[in-house]
Image 1 (cartoon, rainbow, N blue to C red):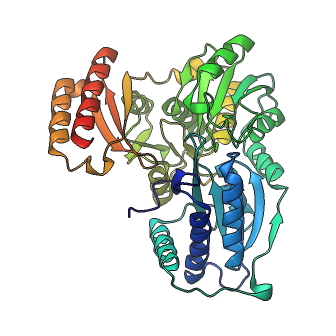
Image 2 (cartoon, rainbow, N blue to C red):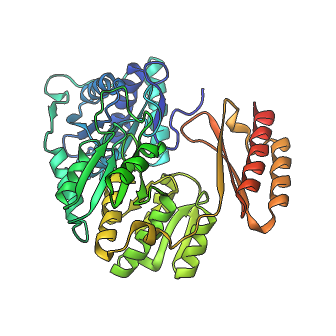
Image 3 (spheres, helix red, strand yellow):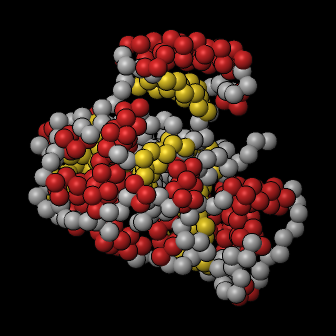
Length: 452
């Protein structure tokens, strides 16, 4: 059996891969591991539990709450809130543990469980491994000490979470955005209420799409993975910009007033220069991943900002930031981490900071994003292949070598197994879009042939 934890918690098809039994068992195991690590020492433990609007989140939340309470942990249920809100509240309320139920940008049938440590930080890999080991031991029949009487956890609703989080977002903005018209696509997800409320409180005129979650429509033809409706709405309403979130609102992509996409690299570029101007870009450095467009790297070099690149995954960006004290990092997909104000990617905060920059400068988002020129980049997701053999396949290595020779110094190739889905991502950059498309398709065919 493979490792349960991926790069972003435990994910799978709800009630098939991710069952109520698994959710309950992992929660019990997490409580035990953190207790053994000394996290609960000297006090009664408390956990914050939130979810996105997926229908399956209702029964999975019940299972997580039951597991934690049965292990002696008091639970604060915050309901439907973004992942970064659960992380923030875990820290702000002094909780020992945070749990978020979401599969982020994945389709509705999927769901996931993500644990946060005290302070709202992601759990270390070592703790996740211990939780998995403990879960498997319990599942095989190993007994565990069950509290009784007053020792069982108590469960209560924490209704102030929404207002506390929105107040936090408004409180860290550098300026208001009065007079700005913004379209928000909430992906029918966890930001459906939070993001429009935060933008409105910050002074923007807000138009919403994708803000009517019914448990079944999350990410469906909307949000950061489907920008067409946002593009159309921005142009139709004559808005200054549009902001799109994913299902759990830990990411943000944008659209300028002409309906053109502004991706995570461009957002990072805009925020990096804004933060440098404000004196908050520590060590004059921004952290991104190897998936960042070459144009972003060239722009940062031209502007005199140092760029450090990590493996793909916001957790690796965050690890680099924390290890060296950097303030800004993120991914092309729109995960942007502003470490002074958040412990994880925060799509609502990112959108607010981007809009605030437009308001403060009086420049359009298109003008601001023009600090970098995106080189043509093609990304193909190859599904139903054995992603574990990406590095070991000689056939695939030969195909990559041929592609790199063809591109020369004007482009690059990256193959990456997804950390959350059963697929391999093929990325090709080139000076010419047709060349990038041809090389990418040839590599995608090679991946299917070698790993299928």
